Length: 280
Image 1 (spheres, rainbow, N blue to C red):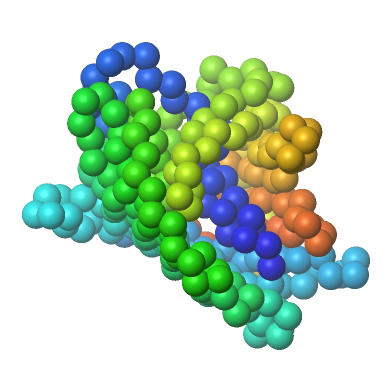
Image 2 (image 1 turned 30 degrees about the vertical axis):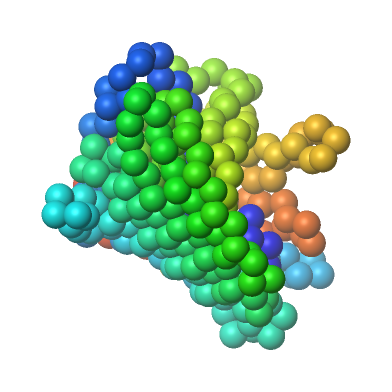
């Protein structure tokens, strides 16, 4: 399994929003009012791979959010866990656990990703501090070969990791986007801070599978990556509910070895009504 599957599941909400601070005060830039989620929310997914033209279940993922405390102050904690199925374990076992702690106004404080993938273990930890109008990141990265990278990066404006960016951007509005619009953004990953691009594709409907079929009205986006020659490749297309919850319900992924899909199977503890649901 390619690690992009897990990464893109996290960013499927966040990456269709762009936030470029225009004022000098960092504190004024980073806090945002949370209108999308609450403590007790849980999202569950099933993952599938195309194996020799046959779609097979690859595993499950879940993301839960609760109130917590960080250094004596109230905060949110979001955990995301991905587990491959027993069938896939024979070829590539993956057990990934991510945790983000951020303020009630979604300013990141701490991030941790422990990833056991293909017999190798990687650990990424980020601690955030704020001073002088900058986001200061202390980034620890344990590579799969056992080597360690420790970097301190200082960036103007707001920077988020995979999880805190998802939660932050769920409260933004996407009504001003036009079809084909390119959306740049930056985030912390490993021991670096990166800049990537999204393209807004418009509004489409998505019908779930299984006994209790649902039809969602969704905002559709594509995530692009550049190769070493600077050529862009479409890595994933994803569907986000067009309501106040802004939850990802479907992902179509182009991986190194083939294609994969992720589907929302259950959502509980939602803060807002699911107004993107359409009646049959």
